[in-house]
Length: 79
Image (cartoon, rainbow, N blue to C red):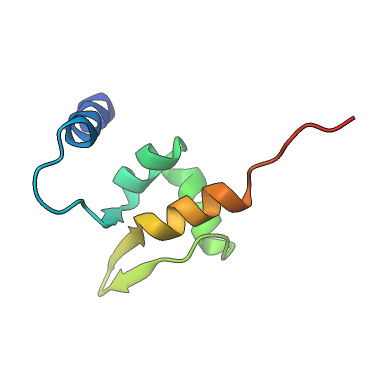
């Protein structure tokens, strides 16, 4: 499945949620959610800027942590 198809699938799920919302995202899904490349997301993880969950070799990101990262990094332009 290409990145465009995954993004479209994500958008459709957000438009028409049925059942519980997805809380954990794998690296490629999280990169799409944050609007970054997989490599740049990995750099954020290695730098300790975004917390993650490791299950064996798999890495997952909590949507709440990603939303927190977005909120922390919002900036406003001031004169």
